[in-house]
Image (cartoon, rainbow, N blue to C red):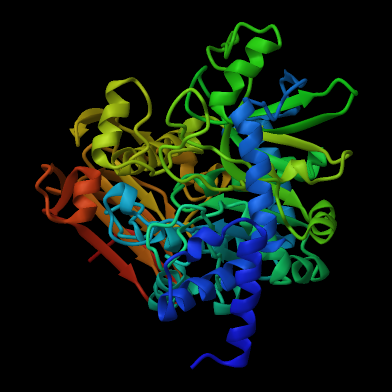
Length: 580
């Protein structure tokens, strides 16, 4: 029997459906079937700002504009935006990294993680995917370890807020609890939930079909939960937003924060070089005829017509061979001074859009149901007109190798000359970045050799992995290598794992070596030579049963390993020349 509260909610939902012209959803439904739909409609009515009536009104307005072919950028002239273009490890990068480290105590991180791994062929949440099979650390563990390492360099805790979806919420909590929050305090990593929104085309006659509203909902969640205001009142000056499968993010995050502080950005987009016509959004300054302007992400399929209409030769390359419009990495640094008042003025609601799939040229019939969407990076639409919005662009090798595509799709991208953005490249690019940083710090690492996994050929470097507690940035890596790294030599076939407070003075590695220093232990590698069979990456086939191995295209065979584990406090020395 329905309660009085349920009856009232269903009555309001039925009135909302009728007033918005959606009564057809109830046709033929009686009893429990009718109740199921009305209770769902009541929940959706409460979840969306403006309720079902507002949703349908917005959908009709946006669909009408789409049907007419209206451009959201009509009358705008695209210009290259203001921003910072950095080279990893140069003096400007290191300066901004030092600024960012000082600012980090006043920052908090927001991880947008509503996705399942189904698109990759992984039956779990994407945060549970291993970053590398060398250590088995999942993405969430790497992120928590990175924040913990930054926290230990400052004077107070750095919060992590995770935005989940209905599909991922419980599994994210379970992953955190299983890993004991990976060293972070539990309350700092508690995910707020994000509900889906109404879609107008029901699959089940007893339910309304729903689809995700988009990661732009993170702003409304931060407002409605009170977290944004709470952090601001605690003295937090910055929020850093990032995505769920980006292993290189923390190599550049501190420098981006430094750029925001030094340049006074209210919103700073992480960016990477993009080639013309790449399927990657572009950070663009749009100048209007009234003299106003906005700097915002423009999707790649909208950039070309916009540039052509403004007299450019389409999506073009400059002298560098890349587009002058930086590629959007979907990561942001936002100033709380501009953000919190904007949330309180707008309720955190970001301007929506539709992306309908039309069945024919009349633009009146659809191949499938469409939805209203909002994007996290569209925040400039709601910021004050005088807000300073820019970007910080990093080289791709050190900043951007997301894991997005299943093996078959990734192989197609590779064959067409595009980056596969897969489990294969996510891991190989992780190794490549670490080896390149070691070389920059003075070590000798043999050159990469080509290897093919899942039909994708990659330059395979030594499998070098270090924990954030060993080092995060180049300056930290350099400080971990004595003698300017001149006595460090690593072969291409080697695997090296460094975890904890470890100083390398002299190391010759041709095989597999793992050194772990637990908290409180300090290790000096005075002199060490390791030669063993090491670990072998064995290619797998499409019939591979292990889903992680199938996504990557290889298994790791541990043939021989030299292990050092130090669990007691104090200094420990590894020196093969020391008396026995």
